[in-house]
Length: 190
Image 1: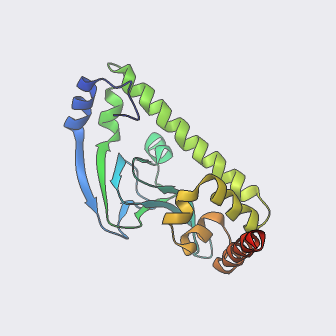
Image 2 (image 1 turned 60 degrees about the vertical axis):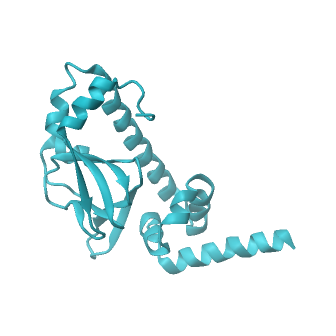
């Protein structure tokens, strides 16, 4: 409610009537690769990864979802096409699940909900653009430093292996970058 003050109390009640609380165990999927997205959700607790698998079978992470973030594959829902990504719980999680089709039917009579929907799309586009920018940085050191400066929550909460998958680099290269920055800060303090 604090994040989207434009939504009226009556509209929150309406949303509540179509939403369900769902518990998801670590490793279970909110959405599996190849399935058509029909639901969206807000994360109440836990973390998720939006992952793809490349031709060699390596997992790459395109986005993380944390508390209060929105879980959805808008492309799959809009095109009614199989999802190219999986959305997997990285720890036990609780979500507020909403059927996307039912939510869309409210937009005509509740423009505030449409406004929030547009705002959520903007946030997703910004996250995708940021990830593309990170990947354009040449070295694992530059990529890790960007996260350290701009997304410290990822550094604090996500394992080094999953950060490496997000930065599209090896765990070893990322570990060297992290050690280099640590040594640099120690030398600066001496």
